[in-house]
Length: 360
Image (tube, rainbow, N blue to C red; front, side, top):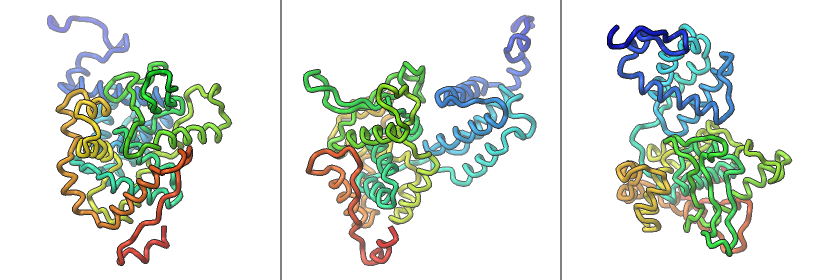
């Protein structure tokens, strides 16, 4: 009593002393995980009441975290956090959130590996080529953007059309490239690391038309919803594809290319982009660190795996590498810039895959 004092807690909205002590040393981690979920709901304008809305919000949050390469323990710890801090939300035996319980079961079955390889550039373009060839041009563009910008998949899918800025005029004295702005302060959003107004220039020398294709994607989305640039108030997502659908098609393309365990999650693009840029000496270590918004060089070493690219590329069939390089050159183009994604080239198959080309 002398240590904690006699005062009201639960009556004024704070957890009671025995409640806090029951959580133990995990209380700080629980609070952090719960706040991250509530921040997500705030950004996406999701409701958490009644229970059906909470269930839907938890399922969508699980989708985003799964696409980001998080293991099922991320969802389990969120469940424990809400159960400890807000027991009235989940109810006894999680009866209020049955779909979230089902999501955890599927997440546990399909949880990606914790050790992620870097995706070689040619492999990334080959996957994009298959997605495009199957009629999923937008998904192919998503895949290329993840690789070039080092963005987390969840961060990319939360971009709005107004977050894509066109290149400034030549007389401005600024870099002549389109840019993405993450977590704009005007919307009171923060990134996963709690930052505002982080910027990524679309200045990829290996994929120079990416910025213009993203502008074409933005204009197409506005056209679909009958919006002008002046009427766009920042509520229209840049991409219409759902994260879960993207992962399913991405894995289907990986399976068709017979890439095995090399490619398990689109999150590996966040490893592949930095590794390629350092291996080809396109950017220095400090520039790569700033582009990926890593707080320290130590964090960068967890993502940059340029040396392993040599080992990984040796495991890929030559026809897959040829397909990727041909598609990269097609995307790069030699004529005037187009605002719409161009169709991919047909793969140059090896004999054992020749019979499968008609299936694309």
